[in-house]
Length: 153
Image (tube, rainbow, N blue to C red; front, side, top):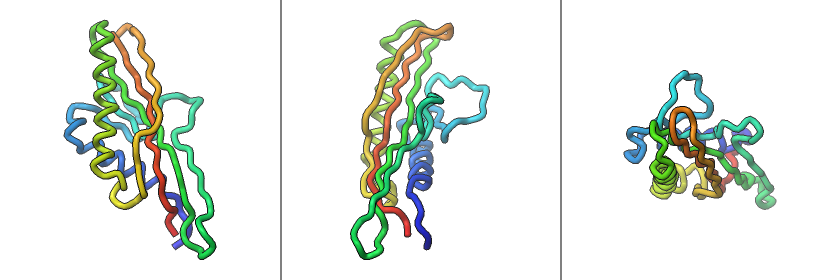
């Protein structure tokens, strides 16, 4: 088998897992950027933050020993949890965004090896932004899922 990154498989696994997780029953989960005119009130994006100036994934591969075994690969998948409430109650939007962020961590904690694809996946850093829009209070958490793995070979 030729060398290959674990990034695409990890993204697919996370998207599929988030879509069926009971924590996200009424939450729209998008696999990267979606072509849609919908404006969900609660959404989670995987490998997409909506920021054109930021990459969706960063990865580094390093040699792991001398025996031709797979390389070590560490990567960060950027995601976003967004809440748009019809009211101007910022507290409600902010708390719900953090509930979605916490739920993402709980879902990852149930299978931190992503079905054996990685050695470990966990929540990494996050940023928070809030605003009042013409559609109400908006809260956005951009967060990373940090993965440690071996490449496929």
